[in-house]
Picture 1: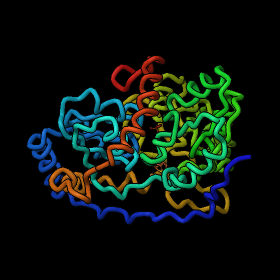
Picture 2: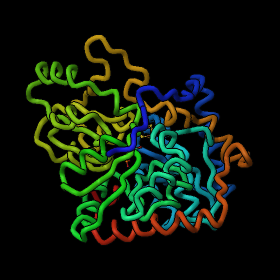
Picture 3: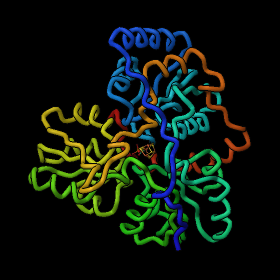
Length: 353
Ligand code: 13P
Ligand code: SF4
């Protein structure tokens, strides 16, 4: 029996889109950010889903644009004393848990994730208590408190390998929070998994009917899908994987047209990786449906130039990640297990992919 979290009925506090900046304003904030990075001995770390102009600034200033696993690894290896994490809150929290000696700022602490919101720590902990014989594996897209309750943290780039490993040791698993990723891994591994039923509001919107129509229009296109997408969409895929794995697949697949079912922020790095290919966003509005977020995470979109400059300049309650030390040490255990496991797998990093 799965734990039912009714994602379809959940109401998320979608943020307002940041006000668009003029070219002069953008230049002003970029110059300011560059100065502040030097002054504060800081470096920018951003997810592939942030807006292209943000990713370009991160590259220009020697920061890191990556998937959630690599973002977590980066802070550990970089000498800067301050990390400015452009992403959603769980990414900033992960950076702080792994780097307590560093200050971790975010453009806004209100950048949520529907998976994190869909898995409240008290409910989840009660659920785990009802199944004490199961190993608790949680996705990185969760709060520090949920991580603290887990045996393992995992990102989508190593989730299947980890579950196969635990299954080979005869362990029964609780998986949380993403229902589509959980079902995908369960089907692939055959493991005994009890899955929490939250969903990503971005990937949940990809529509099979629209995808079939698009494939008819572009029969030679390859379909690339993030495993937080619905089952029928995953079944159409030529490649299924985390954001970094999808960029890698875009490079290596022979097709010149790619239909991509993940946040369109990824197009910036994907197009760099294969400049000769045409990229199409997978449809989010099938027949009779309307998209609310339309393949761009509204919380990732909060990471604008102005907010980054304010985060670096002001810190404080609005921008700095602070985690109670006892909770941090509890959450560190499953996070370190994830990093050790990833190191043993010797996954490519964005530098050597
Ligand atoms: P990745 O771990 O693939 O970067 O995904 C993070 C995420 O938030 C997907 O929606
Ligand atoms: Fe969360 Fe989905 Fe946004 Fe990723 S894209 S941060 S899973 S809401």
